Structure formats: structure tokens, C-alpha cells
Length: 85
Image (tube, rainbow, N blue to C red):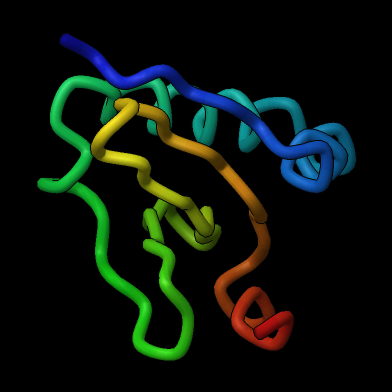
């Protein structure tokens, strides 16, 4: 059974600001991990969350394995996404 994907408002806002092609690539990548997200996600050390690499962008994701929910919390460029933490 595939995971449900939920987009936080901050992630949606970021997608609206970047180029359409980059936003589509990020959306496709997130939708593509819904069947087996553990294979694609890397854990973050300082916070209880995961990262997903999409080219020069990173998506910060909360994974609820019990309820099978992927929550996309933040998206940003790799050079400054981790400054938020």
C-alpha cells in the first residue's frame, strides 16, 4: 500500500516561487517514493526528519510509518535548506 503524501504550506509556497520545470521535477520525485520511501530518504542527525535529494534541491520530510503518511515540510536549495534547523 502506498503512502499518502501531504504538502505543508511552506513547501507549496516554495514550489510556486521556483521555475515550473523544477517544481514539476520535485513533485514527480516525491510522488515516486510513495511505495517505498525508506529506500530514497536519508535521515537527518539534528532533527527527527528525513531528506530527499532532488537535483540541487532538498525536501525535508516527516515520515509516519504507522499511518503511512509522507509529510513534505520544507523544500529549499541545498546550500541553505539546513540553515532553517
